[in-house]
Length: 430
Image (tube, rainbow, N blue to C red):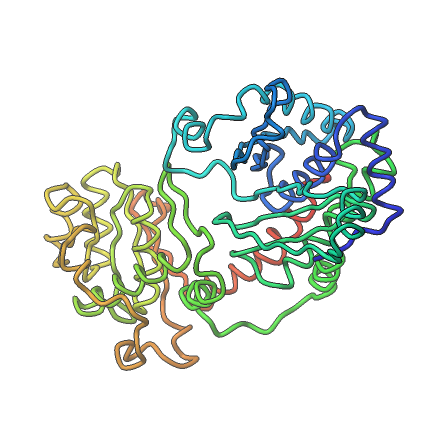
């Protein structure tokens, strides 16, 4: 738990009073900016708790019962919009929604049209259990010297803020590590400080790069060369799955797959492919539509040590035939065995397998052992081909271009450091 300095707490309260809004609205705006920074979005949805005790209902304050409810709040973080405008809009939205506080989150989610996808991943809880005067009375009358409570939720991130002479901030987390959690709390305090000092400034002018991120970025920008990492892309996925198994890795329509689930499916399919002939220096053709299964298949081929050959489903038959005859894949993973691409693959000697083959689901999904990866262990494995793509060629005949495991890993690390990290860090300032 982090305690906000009394001076900053006072300024936040004064800012809320000057804008004619609640402290909750000010905090919600700040948290939305932090969330938008990490999500890379200016359209943010947060969950907030409401008391469920409308003031116009006579006797509601004395009624015993749990009326708390969780509702979504959508925040527009357009960079040119002022922070004060954003705060007032949140407050107005909250006022408008009060008449619907009794609606359950499940009902709201169904009304939104996609009951399988969570509306938000971050929940904000503003605790207002005891004000200072009430606590003083309890202490004097009953000898109570402290009040402690502990709540848990199923949301990936839960922010609990408790007003008082000094505002307190507590972050409960499931999908990030301790260092990232501390950095996010630091970010929130920084944004609250900036909003209280300059509520009229644009949202895009709010500094969101925390100390940890700034140090990391400065380190990246100061480096001109790096030793090549000896891990494959599939290795990196496995490591991420170990670190954050419950974090969402893939989203396709209403379907979601966590890193842990993705990694297990990759191991399962890679083991199956190995049993069917996938190995280093061999090609596995992929003729699948864009889907979660396509991503699983791609990583599974890389984990098996083979190289994948992507085939576009709408290519002319003759072009497909030319490609598979030239590449001679040992396997073809596809959605249908009676397709034109399946026919061409069989003619080239490939074994055709459907991605929903029951035998795949019956294969063990634990981590592949070194003995199972025979021929694809040690530093030398990075010299094997990772994927093969075909260009049109100067003569019109498809020409294959190979990329090795070392090149693929190098491209990943370069993109992460030179493109993704600076882009994410600066996105909120554009």
